[in-house]
Image (cartoon, rainbow, N blue to C red; front, top):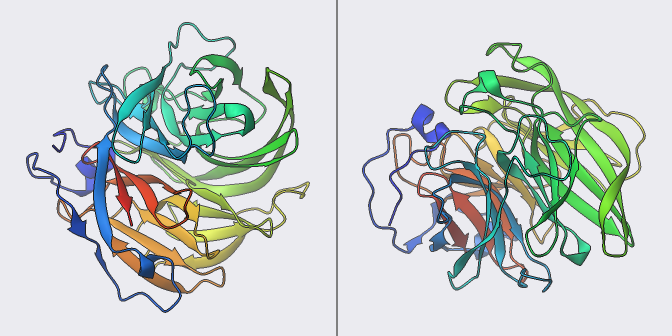
Length: 375
């Protein structure tokens, strides 16, 4: 069943009808170009509710478990919740693990008052979610005290072990409202690429503030100890961001790392995708990067993932579509993933992740509080 709790984006952009049953549907969209990844996918299927026993809603982050480790099971999907049971943004504290067959169980419920280190403002789990070698889970926190942007705080990155226990916090050093994240690991080193959306945003009072950043945070692992930060480099800066009474904050969101080391960024406010070259090795900021594509089928891009063919997948905050774009900027296909509301699907889509078989895409639907799959 659909959960009759509206996400912030949905409240702003869509007047959703009352809860209705979810059924398996054919995915609608543009006729995909030959060779597109979306051209091989035809059906949207609900997997499971993302609402745990404590009632947290508004699923944001989505990450596929690469291998068995502790409580993590290979091929399952980890989902982070941004809102509590009262639908207050920036107060969600739970991570839910869902199997491809729809079995959901709680992976972690984080106590803001019992953390091993600083996390300014508390806990409100965002789209920033990655699973590292050894089963270490890193998730972003952009917390509020009452669900409004006036009380938003810098937050942190929370590092959990493979049993769901918070073992470390990473705060400061440029971390200010971590909103989304991707990761790349090489031996004992992991580089986290984290977007930040609170640099001067709250003080801006709803006006656009061009101070959003992308950080490369380098971690090193030592045996069974949690990975620790050894360096932080600002590789992107000047992204547009602003607070919003319904969406809390809008700024640079999804990030995806290509095989050639280019980092693609969903520049939500400007309705475009940009690319930061040499993201793994650069020592300075590329600003907002080079524009790959803008407008067209894009409508407030949020979640971002790299398709198996190297193309860029983004979910729209302004409608219920997923869009596929080539690295050269050609928008080759889109599919409708959510058709509820007016306009259809507005505010429903955030995180997405390609499955391990590389033939399907998992995505969270905030309008229904469900994990779905396009295959």
